[in-house]
Amino acid sequence: MQIADVMTKPVATVPRGTTLKQAAAKLKQLDTGFLPVSDEYEDRLVGVTTDRDIVVRCVAEGMDPETTPVERAMTDKVLYCFADDDLESAAMSMAEQQVYRLVVLDDAKSKRLMGIVSMGDIRRQGDGNIASQATDRIVAGARPTP
Image (tube, rainbow, N blue to C red; front, side, top):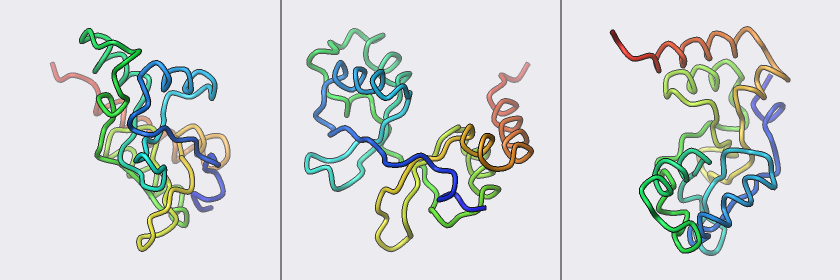
């Protein structure tokens, strides 16, 4: 089974100039914790942000959610896979990179945003065993060493 078979689509994005408050409202409206961030023209992916990024990177530092742009909370290193990747390779990529979601691009040439795939998508619609193994690796990697 390929990522295209299980990914979430279409994908909502926010322009990097969107305020933290607006981005948080969109996260709430979509009932998600992850949003790709686009350039002003919404045709190029420039980063991703999560609800945790907004709180930990910005609000906890005293930044005003009404005026601070989401680009202050975003991660500009976008972790991705391709729509024709198989579930196991995407799950192992998540495990290696210690993340639970990847942006899905159409192919290596055009790199158009096609969707988002989460470990939950793989577990629900694909192979629960692969998802469990990858999740175990993520959790083990997140544990502090004694």
